[in-house]
Length: 463
Image 1 (cartoon, helix red, strand yellow):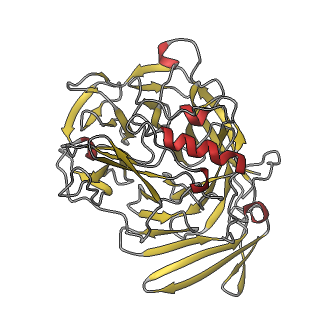
Image 2 (cartoon, one colour; image 1 turned 90 degrees about the vertical axis):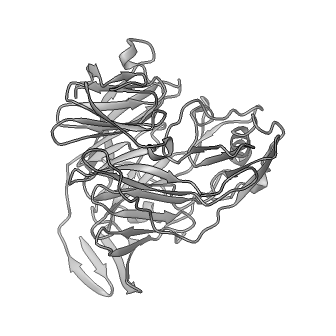
Image 3 (cartoon, one colour; image 1 turned 90 degrees about the horizontal axis):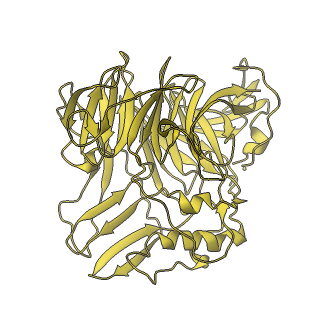
């Protein structure tokens, strides 16, 4: 493979993970994705620069992997009709070890352990509010010795279980806003995803909310939270006037949003999808800006009405006459919609590809991402952060218009260098994001056209 860097040409060997059959090309080049043209080509062109203490790595064409990556299904767990252990509602997270696969179902709720043949082993803990119990499990992590950590949103705590699923210890996190997710670093440090509320908040007043990571000591003591870098961006919103002088703000479909993630290596990643650029802030303070040439994906004109109605329906219970004009839906999709670090020093950048007609209306019934923030007249706050499954279904499309579903692709970058490795297309419709990635193992929750939820294991290969 030939790599062109800042005017010089370097030779480097091609990284070959496996040999497989050819992969169908995936779409994606504003000059800002040219993925279909660049992924798999021999010439990998990278531009590097540095200013104000930030090193910028910009991929112009090609990829480090050089081939065409894809996900090959190896295991599917879940049934439409069968034993309770194989019936899933809303899978919020998952984790794989050498001999087990753990699945967190926030809707049932249950945390289940399976072997790598897909056979049910046992439930971790049980439903309830006492020791070793949970009401709304959200995040999971497994320590090197096999002990299981689970964050319980409704119980506002972190629980520790032994290798057989028995409760060992529980630590209060103070409030549900401190139990939104979980990250276990390579060094075994525990962080929970948290939301910091403004000091003053009330009816008709929207303060600044900050998400971050809360470190926990070995005995559950909480340290000072760390926050992702700030990026100046004001997303377009719609104000909703409701009974009782309440106020709600909803992010419009396909508008770029602020995305961030905390990696197992201690890096903070953040970016806004109005451009293909995100910042990596290393634990030692080093900052790397990652950029990539890309092509904006157009929103199908027939889809805009469906998206406007679906977004508006999320708020109809509070404001029955609320609507969003089709003209408010952007004509193109953002550069990316999620940043997902894996446990092998990489970040998977979720991109929406062209949408397809969806006869089962899976996106209309399966809940949405983004963040809904609702303020009641009493000042109470209800928050649904991007990437968590709080429960219940999504909106409903009330007319006869055709439903649409996104297709997805995932640009993979190396965190240490910011270099682009390749684009992995979603292996099937219903695959929206990975839940767990380590090495070439990928776990994801997939909903089929009948609405059946399954936890699937894939192997990453490069042709």
